[in-house]
Length: 418
Image 1: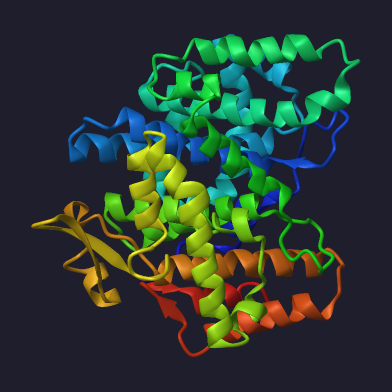
Image 2: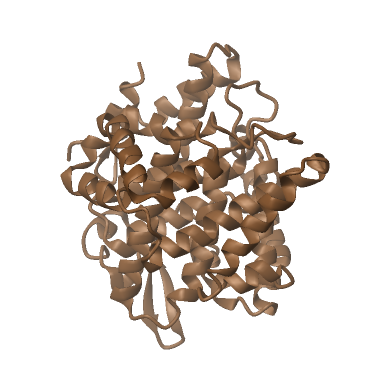
């Protein structure tokens, strides 16, 4: 299988790590676009869990597919129009003709990097971005998640801008627009804030405060939250390229989006520490799982969010020991039973929606690719230190003797960075 994913697409997805948000306001820290996108898509996952609760399998898969892809379309659009302030953009969006003129300028900026994904992908993206109105259910879910994630950022910087006369108006805009979306299950809970559903959404956003590679100078710096979005996006595109069924590619996206959630409780422990000794790695994993159960999953269950707790458990591979193990869920006498599968099974007999498959090796590859991009970008930006060189070299070595993963020619892709 030839690789259609190119270096340019990986770098485009990563470029949100450079984009500063709220850069006309006093901020206690830099707020970055890639972090906001991660928080937005976490909230999308939460809202989808409510919206699709009573849908049949195919209806649910179709909506989730449309929503994930719509979120990626929005992100690519945002990467181009980053310098347009939101109030100006919303005024443009309110006028269909003006919005379509802007979009007709945006699309050619993206096409060179996205064209390898195929004509069908490009046609869907063009159709979605040319339509300014938020009419479909997927678009309205994305808007609600976008407003919540942006409002979360606003609450971080609000205390530092108490004398800014625009702040009350901005806050009113967020709350009033969210209230128009309360017919979407879950939005009222998010607005209330006094429930476990909302508390989980808020906790997840705190991962923007945790820097990766905290002892290694880098440009740009990345956070655990932003890294999770990178892994999710890479997982989606590689899953599509690998011919994954809809359930599998959706599980891969959301597993990428949550794979470092335990670091909310343990901080970012670098790979050399985890792998320095098998017993240390196992001890860290046990502690992560204990804290995840005590501080995340148990409160979700007791707070009426058993569905979220159960789904997180599957995505994070708690019953099999790791999120990086390939699994399916089969019906058994006691309900759905999680079973480990081989890569060959996953690419063939197990690659069906009804088995709810999830890749392990592909997700691990995307996790490493994201780390590779972080190290490579910093080196190209003139940050020359031994840790970054070692990280880049180590990841290359991992795929020197195994250049293909789930049909993806990762060795050739890494060679493109020479």
